[in-house]
Image 1 (tube, rainbow, N blue to C red):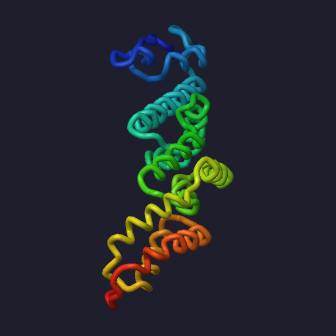
Image 2: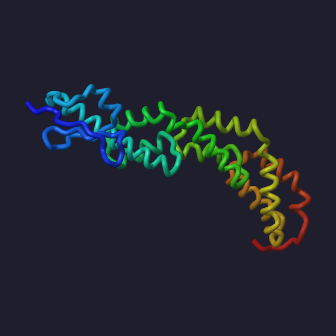
Image 3: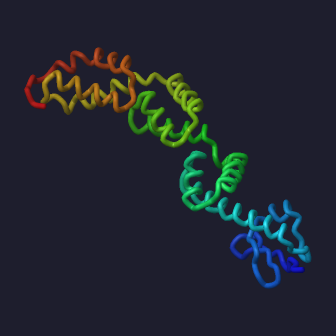
Length: 219
C-alpha cells in the first residue's frame, strides 16, 4: 500500500505544506489541516484518505483565492459566493469557505453594509431608498438592510443633505422655466432615493429660490 513519504512546508509559505506519496505531491494544504486530518509520515494512503486530502486541497485553493480578492476590496457573502461560483467551485466547497471567512471575521455583511452606507453618504446626499438599493445589489439580507438604513437615518437627519443637493443643482437651472426647475429638482431627489415627503419638504423650503430668476421657455 502507498504511504505518505513527506509533509514539508512550501518555500513560499511555511504555514502551508506539501504532502507527498512517493515522489508525487498529492495535496498542498495548511498546517492546521494536517493536524485536523491527523496526517503523519508513513501513514497508509488509501482511497478514503485520498478523498479527504482532495477535499482539503480544494478547500485550501478556494480559500486562498477568496482571500486574494478580500485583500483587494471588502465584499459581501453573496458577492464572494458569486466569485467562487465563477471559478467553478461546487456549493459545498463555497459554503465551507464562506462559513470559515465569516467565523474568522473576514466576511461581515453588517460591517460591510455599514461601510457602504457611510461611503455613499460621504460622496453625495442620498435618501433611504437609494441606500436600500445599493445594499440589495450587494446581496445584503433584507432585514439587515432595514437595520442599516434605519441606523443611518436615526444617526443623522438626511433632509439637510437633500436641501444642499437641490440648491447646488438649482444654480445650474436658472435658464429654465419654473416648471422645468421643479421637475428636474424632483427627479434628482427621487433618483437619490429621497422619499416623497422629504422631496416635498425640500421643494417648499426652496420655493422662493426656485421661482426666482428668469422665466424662459427653454427645456
